Length: 563
Image (cartoon, rainbow, N blue to C red; front, side):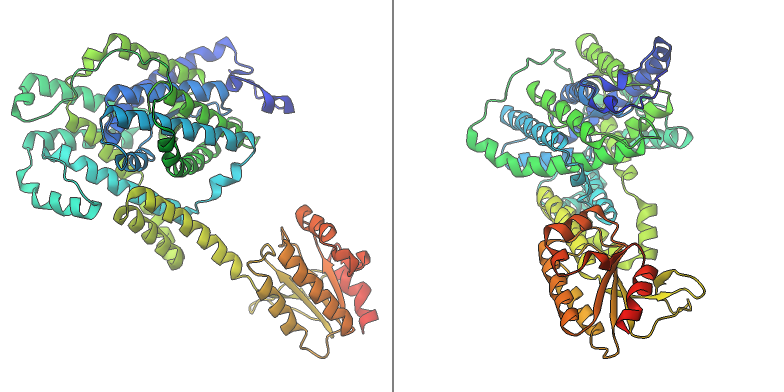
């Protein structure tokens, strides 16, 4: 088993951190987890490669690169990194604007994109930029996933129906598919929805059951025995069975530049999903996840993928959950899975040539349905109509616009939502809880007391240029009371103060002094806010003895003098 590492040196372990403290007794558990992960990964990686317009073996290469890169440089013991259906439709849509899917040019651009994403992730981790993972709020993330799910469903329905894949915008493709439903091939329908049913049933019974692999094997045997290839059921075809040669993609410098915006979008989504996965399956529940180190691991996976001609990789919450649930102890589980996939490419590629494409489409339909967070959508609708509209707007943007533009708009909506929330902050009046020394935000259902000539107010947001004007206006409203002799700012909920807000606060302190009103600050607990007081010269106009540990102390010491 793994002995939890508790000293600070663990966080600086250079390579294979998840193996620190590994003992031979953990080998059986890692082998079992690795075998289970392989059974889950084989059909999933083939299907994801198909989703992106690549040969199935490219998905295997991506899985091997992601597993090796993260095992070497990541921190989380369970995280599985490889081809992922969340990011694949996004970069496939972006690459399709630059090259025809399936061509060598398309593959070279995908490899270059992987390298750019890898560099961005490695830099984000190295420079401790883990906060970028919080760019997407939960409602925007849910809307984003719902939109991606629709893209996956629309892209895979032609394979299930056995008809030609329509082109054009998503809505137009849906309309085209609806017109041609009657032309569906009954055999591809049976295979596609049969695989979907088997995978869903297996997941319902236990996530450890490799339902996708079972379904793929069953569909392949059925296709061979019934001669379905002669009845219009397309198959994957022969895999090359050759291993990639490490090399850098040969594309012009200006094309690298064109890939940068798309790479940035993909990197943000990978950071978001990697952070969520690491926090959801922590190596040690008693210690915070090392998100920055995991960014480096995911970045290393994408870099390796680009070098061997694959595409960007991402953390997979479902596969990571499988490793954790089956008793995996370290990244050795992922390395075992990568080795088995490598062996399949080298010696067993012929086993996969009769896999029906409709079966892979069925796997992806299940993936799409799984990432639609219906329960969360319903809960947000009931609890916050405004944030429910964020879900709808984000999903609509992903569906109606070119997918990379929709993702960019989703990120913008998330940031605007955060800005809007900050700008809505107003002063909150405080009252003393009867028979105590506690001052608490005033509430209609809570009886409170006040002191004559004393106003206690709080501001429950960072003080910044976004709300400095509102803050100043609210304070000036309080100062209109001619009886006021003491104004106390309860600062417990102010984590940060920027330059613009500091100037507003300086002006307010000066106005109070000119009017003979004492100004005090209580519970300035944030270290960043304390540093702002020093940095912006607030103590030059506010005596240090007017900054108190509690509102009660401020009122007790200054109210008599003010009165």
